[in-house]
Length: 98
Picture 1 (tube, one colour):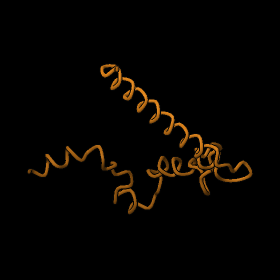
Picture 2 (cartoon, one colour):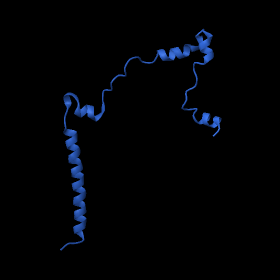
Picture 3 (cartoon, one colour):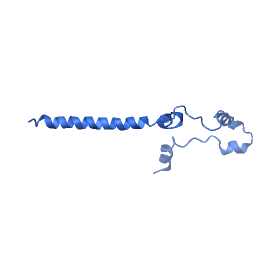
Picture 4 (cartoon, rainbow, N blue to C red):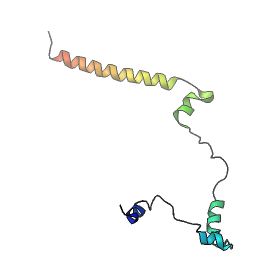
């Protein structure tokens, strides 16, 4: 592969150079003002926790801890399996009536 082909294919992954060596060595720093403004607007500190947190946080952690979702999941799988088994049983006996 040619270097230009690789450079074109990776162009979307590699960010463009914002601070070039000429900007850093010039000493003025005026060319870096957009970069400084961008980074100064970013939030500082740890990321805030999300309110939801998913099923585990909602049902299994904290003051609302409960095993109800696990019980309902087991009962739902059992009910679905029983329904399928019952339907197959009925189809089997439909053609073999005595």
